[in-house]
Length: 406
Image 1 (cartoon, one colour):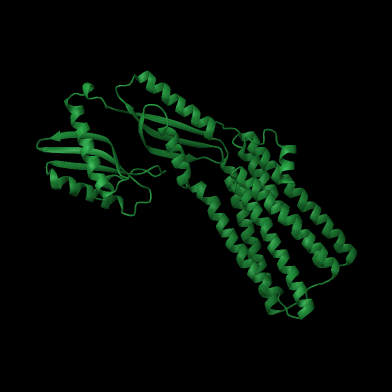
Image 2 (cartoon, rainbow, N blue to C red):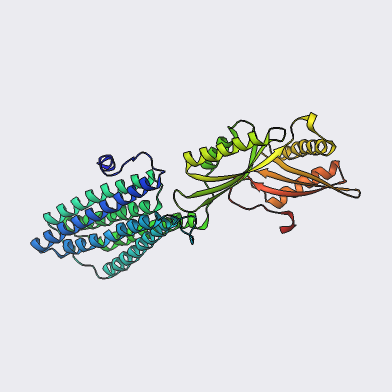
């Protein structure tokens, strides 16, 4: 059913990185949710009025309120798809994150209300309405909501939308709430045990936990969460696959909303290579990554002298120093690397400026790593004074400079 709807209503549905296609997915999910909730409301209200069941009629009104989360997701996709303007040159895609946050807050409010109602029912138990028609209506509602939850989650994952994943969680919570009502109703009818309040309280706790989790997930990209290690590794491998690329470092990725990624990176290439050839390769890298990943990448060119025939005395000294420092840092950890080595002489003191790249999850602090490298260097060369910048490899964090914590 989900695939059929996608094929019927979304052109070029396979190209999910295109902004228009992505917006079409969001609109489809929003309208399907609105239609399903309105139909459920009309069905329950009709059955409730005909059967005289106030609980079914009340649940129908609840479905009408559920449509509000779908409306919010629609608004989020509509606002987020607006093109850049002079005040917002990076676009408006973060509206989608805000829409997801609103849905998450609504989920938490619902959880609080259910919790309050459940506590009242525990203190003052009330008989839960039970009849064949009530059971049938609740079962139909559960089945439809299960499908809605899977539908919204599938589309949310396909286009990486926290808003739709939050809306899916809202539908899932409805399934749990309605199932709890059904179980409590059947249990009380056949056993006489009043479980409605306790079941409701358990559901409320689950919904609150769900809401808090979704709030965190929607806040993370707004606050600037680091990219996933898998995505970073993919970009790194892509860059290193190009002809003439010797290394890459200082990758910085900025998320301005789904489909609006901007990044910068330093790429090392042989200094002896024609600047025009290097520029051509860099242009191709930027173009390919934009077409394949939808990410605007700006590359800083770092020339590295690799041919001894082209060296002058200063370049030879820097080359030897880089090799020496690489040997030192890899003794600490094989994944450490060195780049941007520069030597300045001040009398008898030789200051060596360099960046040391270390794994993102390396347990020691940047300060400890600096001290360890400095001690190893000065144990062999007391005249060398190291000024070290620590890079946590391929993350969106700034450099940690020596004068900040030493």
